[in-house]
Image (tube, rainbow, N blue to C red; front, top):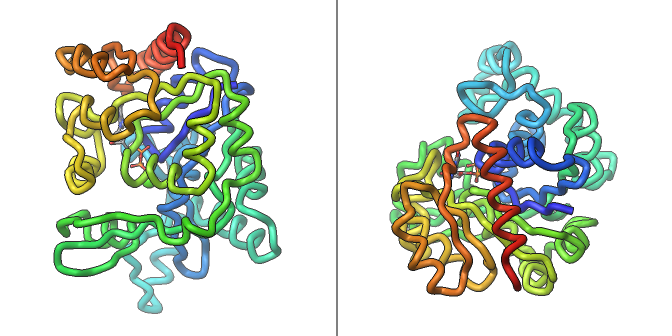
Amino acid sequence: MYTVLAGGVGAARFLRGLIGTVDPAEVVAIVNVGDDLDRFGLRICPDLDSITYWLGGVVHPDQQWGRADERFTVAAELARFGHDDWFTLGDRDLAVHLHRSMRLHAGAPLSAITAEVSAAFDVPVNLLPATDDRVETRITTADGRDLHFQEYWVRERGAPEVTGTHLAGAGSAQPAPGVVEALLDADVVILAPSNPIVSIDTILAIPGIREALHQTPAPVVGVSPIIGGEVVRGMAHRLLPQAGAEVSARGVAAHYGDLLDAWVIDDRDADQVADITATGVACTATDTLMDDPDVAAALARTCLDLAAETTR
Ligand code: GDP
Ligand code: CA
C-alpha cells in the first residue's frame, strides 16, 4: 500500500503520476480538510475536490482546479439577489457540494461521502479526508486579524502579511476511519509536493497522525514543493518564513525534520543534496516539475526507488 499525505493541486499532479507507475487500487491519499468552508449553506472541500476532478479526468486544464467546461448560471442568478459572493461556484461544481451537504445533513460522515463522490467520478485511488471532524485553517495577519484560510487566499488574494497559522478544532479532532491504519500498514508513506504549512502540517495537526507517521515501519519519503527557491503555484513562499523555515528544498526538508527518511528535490536544486544527506535524510535530485504526466510518473518511481533503498 502506498499512502500519500495530500493537499490539493500539487498532490493531485503527483497522484496522477503515481497511478501511472503503480496499481491505483494500492494507493491511499489522506487529504487535508483545513481549507474546507461553508458558503450558501453548502460544505465545500477544495482539496478533496481538486484531487477528485484531476483523477476523475474532469479538471479545468488551465486553472488546474474546478471543472472543465464549467458554467456559472447559478452564480449569476444569485447575484440578482445581491449574493455576489467572493467564492464563486460553478454549476457542475455545485452539484458535488449539494450532494455532500445533503448527505452531511442526513448524518453521513465526510469519509463516507468522499467515497461516494470518488466512485461517481471513477477516481481509482482511495481518498480519505484526514478527519471527519470540522477543523479550519486560520490565518493571523500583521494587521491583527484572524481569517479563514479562504478569506486570506481567495477573498483577499493572499495580500495580507501573515504572522501565524493554526488549525482550529484540531485539539478535539480524530483521524477519519482508515487513516491511522493506512499509515501503519503502508509499504511506503509519501508526503506529496504540497504546501507544507497549510496542506501537510494541517494533516499532521490531527492528533494521532504525526504519531502514526513516527510509528509506521514504512519509509517516509517526500517531494519538495519548492523548485529553485520558488513555489510552482500558491503561497508557500509567504508562509514558510513565518514558520521559521527557509524557502528552499533544504528548508522544507528541515521543516519536516525527523519525520522524513528520504527527500526528492528538483535537478535545479541538486547542489543541496549533500546538505540534506548530511542531516541523515536520503536525498536525490530529478525533474520534479509535473506539467507532463510522464514526468510525474517518473518522479513517483524515483520516490519509490529511493524509499526502497532507505532504512528507517
Ligand atoms: P493546493 O492546496 O491546491 O495549494 O495544493 P497543494 O498544497 O497540494 O500544493 C501546493 C504546492 O504544490 C505549492 O507549494 C507548489 O509549489 C507545489 N507544486 C505544484 N505543482 C508542482 C510541481 O509540478 N512540482 C513540484 N515540485 N511542486 C509543485
Ligand atoms: Ca488547499
